[in-house]
Image 1 (tube, rainbow, N blue to C red):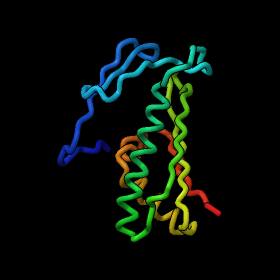
Image 2 (image 1 turned 90 degrees about the vertical axis):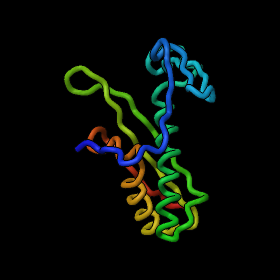
Image 3 (image 1 turned 180 degrees about the vertical axis):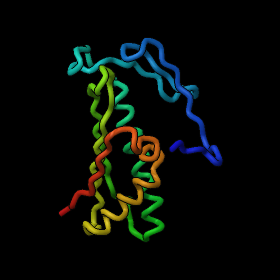
Image 4 (image 1 turned 90 degrees about the horizontal axis):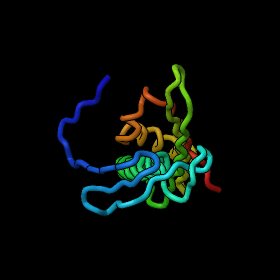
Length: 145
């Protein structure tokens, strides 16, 4: 199923030259950075890579979705943290694919309530909607002692 936008709200634009061993910038100039393969992939490291950028974007977007859901459910998510891990690997047919793990901590919220917020946020988050049924995404609500 393809998700169709009913009302576009914002468009981000970025330009990259050199791919995984290049340079990227956003059209507004806020992002202007080198991109390098990590040492784990035989690269030099020392700069960001697409998987880090995707992890950062997904975590930020998911936390914002939790804020929306938290307000609807009257649960304070303002002190929450989202840790995203994006794994690059091979897939059948010789291509490459991604898998994502999101670990969510909401201090002061019991496990059942946290799980409800996290599941609802997973339905609201644009990154979750974009990746659903395309890549493996694991979302976990962590217990904070």
